[in-house]
Length: 117
Image 1 (tube, rainbow, N blue to C red):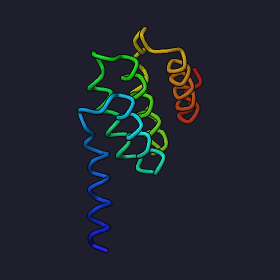
Image 2: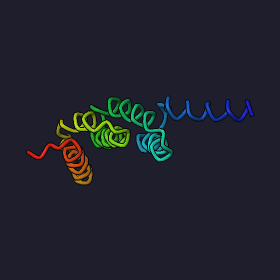
Image 3: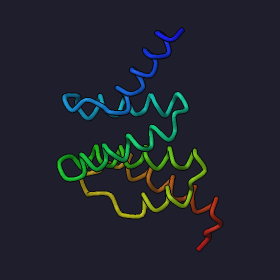
Image 4: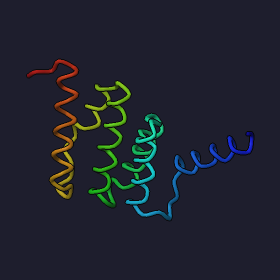
């Protein structure tokens, strides 16, 4: 029992820390797995780290990680925080799908926060 618990903790730690040798796509997949398994705080923290890491070197992936960070925060009930993450415009390099998801998440946060202006 202790061995399986230790193995589970080791796997979660590996997901949280990440591996610098992994591609952005692999990092995103790992972070998305945390989100899909309900580890919302962990996925939010991981996405924030990756968004910062790729912020200047790969704006497309930075946008994807920012969206996942905001979505994790939103599912945690942190709508105002999610809104603040999404207020800065994405880089022109971000694809149309990312800009649409950004607008959708912002609209959802605004509705929840009763911001109808």
